[in-house]
Image 1 (cartoon, helix red, strand yellow):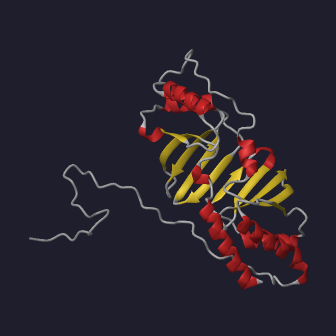
Image 2: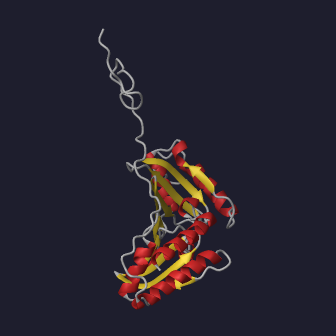
Image 3: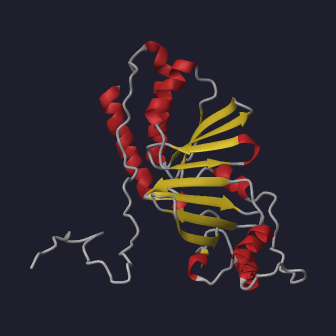
Length: 279
């Protein structure tokens, strides 16, 4: 009798079925964003970099003083050399966002340190650093012009709509009772029977707001403010960009986009280590 060698586990670990069916499974994530100390090419002790060093020291004080003091550090007046130093020092972290009026936000490699820029075309007209769980500009702009409730009219519904209307009614109830700082209400669309027409109606009725956020870790999480107050659409994708979790959330801001107080305390220690190495 001839033996057939098989892998111990994973694809190919089981004999083929008589009907030709094969074992299929989700591929495990291959990459994860992790912290790496910034590699700074400039001589930070050079006299011309005094403004950038002052920004770094101010940022360190802001991290140590959080949450009692949360200053906004203006970078607009820095020249190109000092701006390049800040670019290298901060790097790019896991979370980025676009907002209304040309707002562009990027979390640095130091979690809880955010860089917010206001653009007109390709020109940067405002540039600042902020320490916090999320930049205030995103919170203020996300639902500035949002509707207070979502439309639940049942007249002239598209054919194929089955379960969207009860969800809209649930959202209206949760929007009405929501208060800033309270626990988020999450509706897991992945676990509910939804037709394509249901999802299309939800998107149409909720509308699209001005803020879009991307959080990268294992795969991507794409967060979109709807045009309805405090309602976010949160979609999780694996490393193959396959949608694995689809949710609606009633909150100020989904937690997946936010830094934590522990992150900020850790960033204070990391910045201190960086400055010891380079200054």
